[in-house]
Length: 88
Image 1: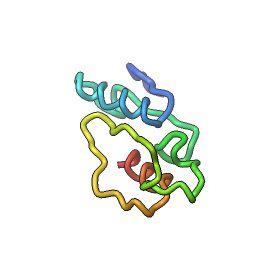
Image 2 (image 1 turned 30 degrees about the vertical axis):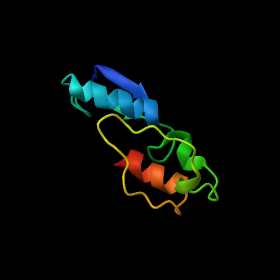
Image 3 (image 1 turned 90 degrees about the vertical axis):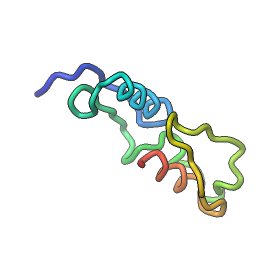
């Protein structure tokens, strides 16, 4: 068992944004804080979108702080594109 300063619940857009800002103030992941999620990978609800919703059909997705999403294939399912982006 170990002690952490912060536990972020959820690896969706809000949780990953919180982790970004924790790093900006000097906290180190896995030493000072951890991000937990019930899902098998980061991505929040995006990873459960239907395959017919391609990235080119998405009406809006805000980038994570400090990390723009560029060069995404508009014909790939949004669940794959955004899931991979959040995992990165």
